[in-house]
Image (cartoon, rainbow over all chains, first blue to last red; front, side, top):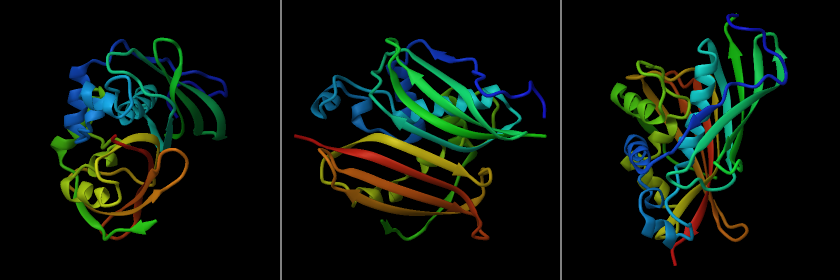
Amino acid sequence: MSGPRLQIGDSLESLVLHAIGEDRVERYAAASGDENPIHLSKTAAEAAGLPGPIVHGMFIMGQFERLLRAWRPDGRIESLSTRFLQPLAVGEFLEVGARIVSLPSENSCRLRLSARNSAGQVVAMGEAAVTLER
Amino acid sequence: LTELAPFEVTIAQSEVEDFSAALGFAQGETEVPMVFPIRLLTRPEIAAAIRVFMPRGAVLVHHSQSFTSHSTLRVNEAYRLVLAIDLVEEGRHPRLVISGKITGEDRRLLQEFAATLVVLRQP
């Protein structure tokens, strides 16, 4: 197993996106095929009862995967789950972090994940199980 | 849940590159992202099958999502995607529940996922 020994309570270095702008959201919409107008149009978002366009939840979940892959390129993500707690407005800041919460075996860990906006509010939380190469 | 007829899917290299780049993954990463199967749900024939379960004019907002990987997906491989869908009338807004299983040509289970989406009805 390469890299430092895992310990419960260890935190991963956070991933910070200073502003998820319209261009980034449009790029994700095109690449994912999810062109739901609540992500792209102020009018459509407001008609759906939202204050304005929101970032795709799956973009945020993708940042969880990005964080885990950057942390341990030798790791294999066995499972990844996310609950979206509140919308993240387009243009907002996003900080994604993770902490090891259990070590089921010498080369595997479970992590708790969180995504926060600029006010420090949790917009999404998740869990992951990662197995590392021996 | 209502199980739909299986969809035959192949993941193109260009799709993975575009999707990975849009998420900000390191350049040159060629592995299919774990969250990539969400891309499959927007393919026209699959999206059309899902829309059958949605009220007309409804807008979806993601509530929760999970993926379990039994084996890494690869580009240019033929897979079978089986979806099971239900619209659950519960609380203020109905929820669309979608579960998916991706198997290889030998029918071995490679990945499972589940999505719950809140259905907002347009006024």
